[in-house]
Length: 532
Image (cartoon, rainbow, N blue to C red):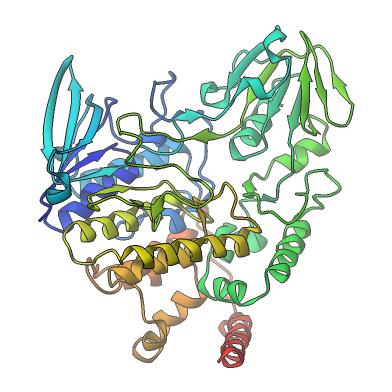
């Protein structure tokens, strides 16, 4: 029987893991190498070895009601998209509210995690840590790894011919902190993800010119959607997810393309993704205007560098280049673990349910938040920890090896359907589908059709409103009595930070506002009837 659990990392995933252990009566000890909690979301001016690094201006790209944890709504006066320091404040409030800090050992590095000599029988682990120059080894019944996906740069200079001859400054985006020292510089940013574009739109106000290189283009969401509301409140909804999963993939891709180009013509701006393979959209409202004003110039793939210039795939050249910023993403590794524990395979997969290493004799180690959902990672991480701790206690069990193979194959097929490929994307998943899958394993998935009979008002909000984490506290183990109220009052918390002038809201016709939802419900029932 598992009792003691070692948790590696005290970011928001690690805090959620501590709380999940306490809910199941386990005894957690969390090891954090730095001097404070917060992980990725704790900004420092220095880049710390082994810890994720962010820039001062970082703002969340998911709104607060979608990304908050399941039994701790964000304060109603918090903005809908949080600057990093505000989200760090939420993390601290969460840790204080649930009294989690006393389970954390700060300035303690995990040096090694290895199987106990009788691991095939007990499933125990030997965890070696170092603090203040002293090493010690302790035995734990289970381990939860929450070290994150953003500490190890994926950039390889060898992939850019001639870059070793470049005389200007080269840095990875994790080294970027503030727009200081870039005045009147000619800057190339390689990589068109969220970080690369954030840095580009910030630096273009200081630099003489910013160039943004992208191999494939990207879809761009703007934080503010039609009506002035956060964009994710509109598409992270159950009814939308159901419709999307019923439709043929080609139709889904056509609808996405139409929706994105209704914001602005991506093809006109030379950033429309090529082909049908999914590329994660980025969230940035400034990029189109910066391209329109010429302060950012979009370029294709880099082919080579010289001492002072860069050459691109289309034959164009930029001379007198001063700075290159590599926004080429991150990789992950587990230097404290023997390679035999996790066999990395980003095609077929490394983890059952994206949590438990494949082929391990005893499932007493869990990897949390090594996942790329089309939705908030921190919410997924919280439910993953609840799933893992109940597995540790034997309250649910892994299927037999043959069934695991079938489920891994099913995941591969779903990734091909959703993202048009299963290559190099094992961590990717559909947010609501994945959440419901692991929720059903531990008895916290809602019976929505039953809910329509017992609580139709709540059911309506659950299906047609934003799909937030509170839904996974409405029933089953870990049920929270405040979950229903949190769902019904979420729009108050969304609107509160916007109403700062005290002007009375114009009333709307309630009947008119429900007509689109009634229409969508009719379509859903017809679709399900046709499937049956």
